[in-house]
Length: 236
Image (cartoon, rainbow, N blue to C red):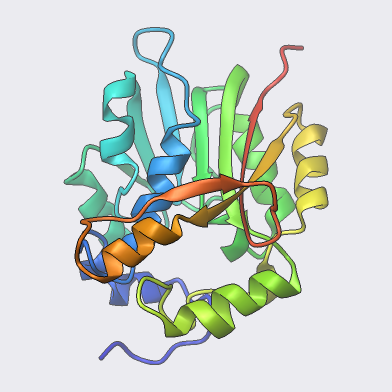
């Protein structure tokens, strides 16, 4: 039994490191979200193109971007997760998302999946994501929205059902104000467009019943719970 920790304590990921690649583990839905995230990434347009995967965790994006032609570098604060990510095609770098050890404009694609709702200084992290993104490069994010509905769905409900997050993984006080996020990205030259995401109910039930190996995510009009965003950095 993992130790009881405060909500959003990053050491929870060390406690749960064996779960990253268990098909029916507590991180199963992160794989489904990673697949939908990868679908928003364009194929590499040049040799040596770089994809920076910020807060990469156990490397769940690895299989979904392997054929796109990028050098896949993952940054995370958790050493245990990075060791797992290395086994799945990700070049690991231990780093804080608010102080990335990469040069300006180095990345063709920057991905920040399921991490903005975990940081305490989101404007600083957004500034870093945009700083390392090259002009003409693509930013892809997904996060939980700062709404009463998201708090109910992801904490009150999801923490109690199979396929939902472990209890205490999220702190709803850090959920993301969508308008503020769009404004923060625009300040750094990235026009972010949002869409909603939710699990396919048919696929989720099939996964619960053991009839499918994995669920999948589908796009929705509502961004009130889980949303993704994509944007291209302007060329100045």
